[in-house]
Length: 192
Image (cartoon, rainbow, N blue to C red):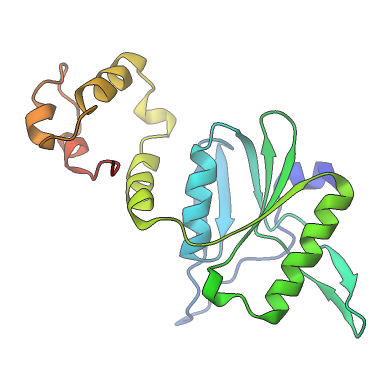
C-alpha cells in the first residue's frame, strides 16, 4: 500500500457535477511537482498550507480506502490526503469544517485514526484555516513555482524591508532591483 500511496493515484475519481455545490479541482504543488486533487475550497486551502510546509515532502489525494465493520454493515472512507513528512513519517489528513461533521463522518474519522495508529502513521482531522492566513497563503502560493525563481537575496531584502508594519508602497520604493510584476507589493501581507 505504501508504494501506491506514494504514486499519488487517487482511489476514486473527482467529480465535477454540472450545477453542483462541489468545488473540485487540481492544485499544482511545488512540493510534488505535480497536480494534487481536491474536492472543496477548504481542501484546496489545506493543500496550499501543506504545500508550503517545510516538513512536507510529498502529498497524495484520496490515497486509500480503509474498510471496517461498524457492527451493522461494512463501511469505507477515502481520507483526503496522505502526507509524507521530510523525516519519513506518514500523516493522513481529513479536511472537514467543524460544523459539517455529522455522526457518520465522526465515525469515519475515528476509524481512520485507529487504522493510522495500527500502521504507525499520524492522523489529523483539520477544519477551516484562519481567513487572513489563507488570503496571504493563496497569494504567496503563486510564487512557489520554478518560473518565479528563488533568489535568496530578494527574499532576505523583502523580510528586512517589510519587517515592521508600514504603508506597503512606501516600503516597496526601498526595494532595489524593483520587483516585477509590480502587483507584488499590492497583495495582502501577513497580519501581525
